Every structure is written in C-alpha cells, then in structure tokens.
Amino acid sequence: MQRASILEYPVEKPQTLRERIVDFIKDSIVSGSLKPGERVPEQEIAANFGISRTPIREAFRQLESEGFITVTPRKGAIVSPITDKDVSEFYAIKSLLEGYGAASACPKLQPKDIKRLESLNAHMEKAAARGDVKGFFNLDSQFHDTFLTACGNEKLLALVHQLVGQFERFRITALALPGRMNDSVRQHAAIVAAFKEANADLVRTLVMANAERSGGLLVEDILKERTKYGAH
Amino acid sequence: MQRASILEYPVEKPQTLRERIVDFIKDSIVSGSLKPGERVPEQEIAANFGISRTPIREAFRQLESEGFITVTPRKGAIVSPITDKDVSEFYAIKSLLEGYGAASACPKLQPKDIKRLESLNAHMEKAAARGDVKGFFNLDSQFHDTFLTACGNEKLLALVHQLVGQFERFRITALALPGRMNDSVRQHAAIVAAFKEANADLVRTLVMANAERSGGLLVEDILKERTKYGAH
DNA sequence: GCCTTCTCGCGGGTATACAATATACTAATA
DNA sequence: TATTAGTATATTGTATACCCGCGAGAAGGC
Image (tube, each protein chain N blue to C red):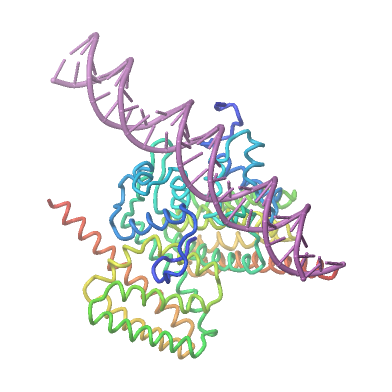
C-alpha cells in the first residue's frame, strides 16, 4: 500500500484514492487532454495509476453527477459532449445567479472588499497586458467570488462553483478571444464603481452584462469554428 | 441528475442495483423515514437488500454529489442536515431561476400550454379543497415544469429539478401550512392571466412572489417549531 | 455474394476478501 | 475520582475475482 508518496498538492491534498482520481479526471477534461466524446475506460486508468477499479468506479459516479462524464450501463463512460446550446444556457444561468449575488452583496460589501475588488482588477489588467490567460482566469474567479461570498447565500456560491467548474475550459477559451480580457477589465471597473455607489440595480445589470458578453462572444466563436469545419 | 421518481409510470424499472439503491435512499429521505443527521451504514443496507456493499458505495457517491447525504472519509455517511438558512437560500435561488424561466417562456408559450396551466390550476383547486397535499404537490410541479420546459433552457430545467428534488420534503411541508394551497391557487391564476397578456415582467414578478411566499412561510414555521422545542 | 446467426472476447456490474482507521470501551495511573 | 493510554470492535477504503450483457467477427445457410 503506497502512502503519501504520490504527489503533494499545494494546500489541500485529497485523502482517498477516489478523490485523487476525481481531481485527475477533472483536470484532464478541463485541460483538454481528455476530449468530449472520448471514452474513459476504467481498466486503463486503473493500470496507469496502479490501483484497482473500485475507487475509479466511485469517482465515475461523482463525475457523472457533476456532469463531467456520461455513463451508459454496460457500455462505459465518455467525456460529456458540450454543445453551443449548453454554453449558451450556462451563461444565461451564470448571469442570473451572479447578478442576483452581486445585487445582494451590494449593501453588505465592506470597504476592504471594495479594495480587494480594485486590487484584483489591477492585477487582471497586468495579466491582460502580458497575455496571461490562466492568471487572468484565476483573478477573475476571485473577483466574482468576492461578491458572491459577501452576498451570504452559500448555496448560490456552491451552485455557481459547480457550474463554472464544469465549463472552465470554455470560459478560458472565451477569455483568450482577442480583446476580451481588456474588455473585461473595463467592465469590472464599472462594476466596482457601481458597488461604491451602492447602486444594487446597476451592479446587477453590469454583472449580468459581463457574463452575457463572455457567453455571446464564445457562442459566436463556436459557431464560427463549426462553420469552418463544416466547409471542409 | 436522475429522473423524478414521483410521476414516473411504473414502466421502466432501474436497471442496475446502484440505481435502485439511489432511488430507495432518496425516497427514504424525502418521505422522512431517514432523518437529517441520521447515519446511513453501508452494511445495514447491504444486509437488508441482500446485496454487496459495492453498488451501495457507488450510490453514496451519487447521493453525495446531489446533496442528499454527507460523507466523511473513514467515518461514514449521514443524511445531510438542512437548516432554515438552507431553506431560505434554496427558495431565493428557486425564485430566481423560475422567475427567469417564466419570463423567457412568456413569448414562447402556446395556447395549449396556457390551457394546460389553467387545467392544472383547476385540478389544484380541487386538490386543495379536499386537502390532498401530495396530489396538489404533483400538480404544482407539473405547473412549474410547463413554463420551465417552454422556456427552452434545458440546463435551467435540470437545475431546478435537482434543487426541488433535494428540498421536496420541505416544499410539501410548506404546502401543508394552513391556507397555503388556496393561496397558491390564487397566485397561479394571476400568473396565468399575466401569461395571457404576454406580460413577461409581470410573470417574472408573480412567479418569484409565489416561490418567495412559500419560502417565507416555511422558514417562519421552522423558526416557530424551533422556539417551541427550545422552550421545553 | 449477402444476410443471418452463433460464438467469443472485451468491458462493465457485482460479490467477497482484506487493509486501515475512527470510535467505544476498558483499565491503569495520578 | 478523573484522566488518559491502550486495545477491541465496528465501519469504511481498497483489491481481487467472478458474472453477464453487448458487440464484433466468424461460420453457415440462402
């Protein structure tokens, strides 16, 4: 039984094999090394990790519930395909939930929260300048989490996290679209200004616009890609 | 997410043992025979069903992801405790999602959908008159599903289903509060009228009010119960 | 030559055995 | 008597073996 000698994660290290497998597969899907529609055979993973199928099967159940993979009995698991409709629907929901969260957070936001938002956006501007999509993405997540946490609705926060986790690879694609990061920095600045004014309705509108813009651009991009492939 | 076990015709039974276990535990929790905080030992279930622990453990992973149980490694599973804060947060989110879904469905709703809504509400009125909470609940679910389906956002529908499934026992409690069913029938009538006018904003407002009223009354009731117990 | 059917093998579903850990209980000591 | 350390037991985590459904490919009939 190998113990603790596998791989040390920075902060929180999964305890059970199942959790490690869940993280591994999620990362593989999000990073793109596992593509939508691709099969995910239990035995192969078991062999690669040198473990039995049991923890892997349990990981599959969890990943299935969270929407990462699709399992058909007696046939096996594949990475869940995601269509432009899925993306479009996702952004509509994200926009709604974040808009509400932001508006709710508005009267509760502390000066230090505002400072944090400003600081994060400043860092995002730098990340945009050097074209650091991944860094920008992380800062952006923190930006949104700041007001989603402040709004106090923990279920909302958890729900948004679940959704964005599933669509992470698409959101990164959206940020990588030309000009999108700088665009987003400007939108964030407007959001912070609205927070300062404690204008909840404006905050909601701006936050929703931020999400919808990302979504709109991304769907457009996906359709363009599809047309390109369709022409071939 | 699994299909709702409520209105399901007994045509197709779950194929795998795991699915059967998932349904069984869900039903037990929703019906109240498994209480929040109560332990859910693998072995006991395995013995009762005369099967091994393997399918049960897989069912646990799924139930955990859907929020029904809470599993701590090497300690075991308990039915997820639900606080008044959870209920309050749930209704806030339900209100948001359904409000949006209703508003989106507004311009798309066909005459037959409106007729369906009216018919369902008429049946609800009868159910209310004879105090049939469970029947009312089923009709109410169909009522909401009608416009959530019409809105076309499948992810939204799935998300709402996941949430309401988890809070089913509380929603039934809410309906059982004195006068709530007749109250709800009146609210539904107003919603149908707004749909007929194709007034999307009004529809959204009314649908949100419908959810918030249930939530408010239920939280009130929970707090009252708690005070009562605290006095003992 | 094509279609049908049977068989076989791959892979997922389940059972069982074993390892590891948390909790309860006991006992010993201050 | 109270506290704590040690042990026993129960329960979860993991590994392995077996079973069976499903599809691919071979074999035989038309």
